[in-house]
Image (cartoon, rainbow, N blue to C red; front, side, top):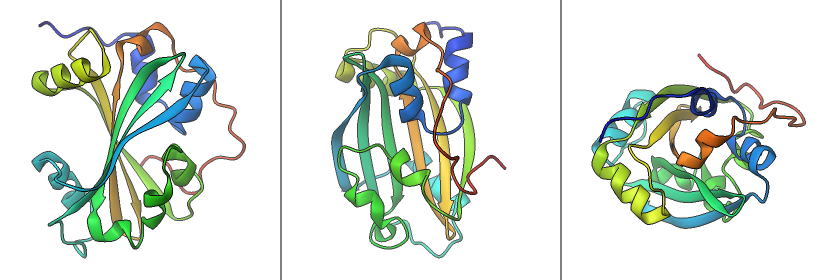
Length: 188
C-alpha cells in the first residue's frame, strides 16, 4: 500500500514538544489511558540498539521492562505507546514507571529533575507492525506513523515509541497550557 503523505496535522503531532497526553486531552477531550500490559518482556532488536546507543554502558540489556498503553480521546484510540527500559532500572532509576498504572507516562517525565529528552524523529511504521496495530485497535488506514524519543536520567535510557491513529490527522494539536515546563527536558 502506498504511504500517505505527511500532512500538516500529522507533522504537528510528530514534532510537538511537551506532554502528548495533555495535548491529546486539549484537542480531543475525554482523555484516558488504557494500560495494555507492563512488566518484563522482550524488546525488539531495534529497541535494544537504541537503548545501548543512548545508555552509559552501565546497564546490561539482557531483560527489559516494557509498558504498553493506548491513549484515548473522544471515545477512540488515538495513540498506541510502548516504553522500554533495562529491567533492572525499573527498580532503580526509573522505578516510578512501575507505579503509573492508568496514568500517562508524562505525569512522571515532566516532573523529573535531571531528565533529558532526545527526539529521534517521526517515521512510517513497518507494514507488518502497522497491520497488527491497525487490526488490534480498529484503525483502518496504514501504514501508520510513529515518533520515537529517548528520555535519559542518570545515564539510563527510557525509549518511548508512539504510533498515531489516522484520526489524529483530522485535528492539529491544541495549544498546550501546562503549568510549568518540564525541568531540563529538551532537545539536544
